[in-house]
Length: 375
Image 1 (tube, rainbow, N blue to C red):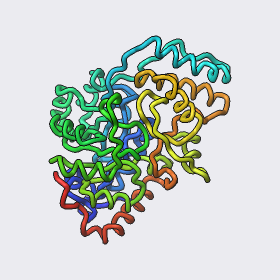
Image 2 (cartoon, rainbow, N blue to C red):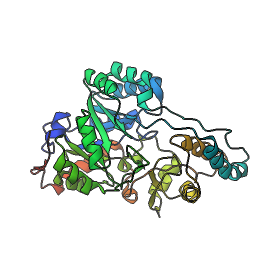
Image 3 (cartoon, rainbow, N blue to C red):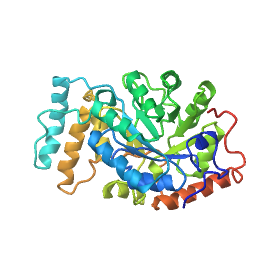
Image 4 (cartoon, rainbow, N blue to C red):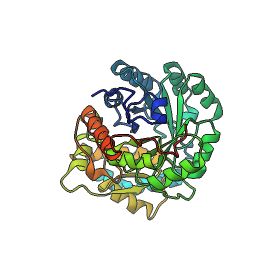
């Protein structure tokens, strides 16, 4: 289903980005495939891919694949986390705690932990790949790039978006020249986008955070976290958001890259709640309750996790060892608080349903674009 750009669901931000429906499919590393992003973009919204974990060559390949499937706007996301500080004693203690589990699955823990991917601020190759590829939208998670990188992407005519979790981060993003922000509520699945994981987290919900940002910023706000249907999108728009970002809602789509265990956990008869923990990757992240979340919570009660993404290196190695023996409970099944309402539909069909739900919730779309929205 491809909707015309003139569709009445479009508000000012959506029109600026060439969207028929004010929905962004969240960039989810390992899940947001070019096929998924293209299907969402072709249905009138904005599809996204995440390239922070695949490097420059992987980014070029994914963007080329996506462009071969759609001529509509899309978003490319990168990680802007602080470089990890190696702490040999902390990392050794962490691995020692995990060693009995590794041995249960017939192997030993890694001898040391690696930074499995660099921050965008350190990856000149990835910056060059994005400048060369000129994606319509580039978004940032965990922070804001250094000024020279922002200017390089702006020179490539990219629309720039930063994920923020509080007003202070939103103000910093606006001052840094971002064109919009994603208001990531505490309900959101996957990694919490806080700029400084050592600072106190206000843990604001999606709608309160959206309202606060709309009130104080002059750039558009995209609401994200716990939104699973068109009624949720309508609620975000009424708070003044220019669009809503949905991630967990798209995980069960056949075009996503989610594994069978992740899908099963999401769509099971008794979907367990999600939990936020820093013990899997070294940064707070929300996923469905399973063996790895229980283990993570147990460990952080006694130890400080290695910096992100060092701890993630250990978690991934443990998952691989367990999965080789048929145990999938040590995989990180990232999902938001609305996971129990996921629908296993092709992305185009899901988009059609979301658009219909949004139109119904907005009285056939006549009041889309709340007065508080700014462009």
